[in-house]
Image (cartoon, rainbow, N blue to C red; front, side, top):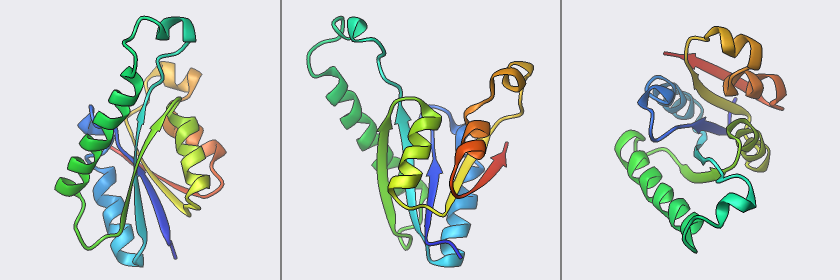
Amino acid sequence: MYKDILVTVDLDHESSWKKAVPVAIKQAQSFGARLHVLTVVPTVGMSMVGQFFPKGYETKVLEAYNERLHQFVAKHIPSDIKVQHIVGQGTVYEVILQIAKKTNCDLIVIGSHRPELKDYLLGPNAARVVRHADCSVMVVRE
């Protein structure tokens, strides 16, 4: 049923993937799907702020996250699953939606925490992905 599954991980917060990654693995194994493992690095913001960082800082950060993502996959994803490592940069939900389209994913697996009042008013990343995705989205709660 699924050929390409996107799973998102925040490498700095285990709660973002602790339950979602096993679900994505099970789905990938059940359908022989390829797993696209995505982590998103936020942008520095305005170009005016960028001048305070050393030259090449952004490239070094992306390279460091790519290395961390490869280590994460080696540790948490079985070697019999086809994996694509993806490091995105920008607003989390926007990057998830862009990568899902770019990789033709037919399922997004995303972790979510219990919503707080502010989330009901503003909407967390998972809610925005669910609302705007062109494919199925599986939200896995803590």
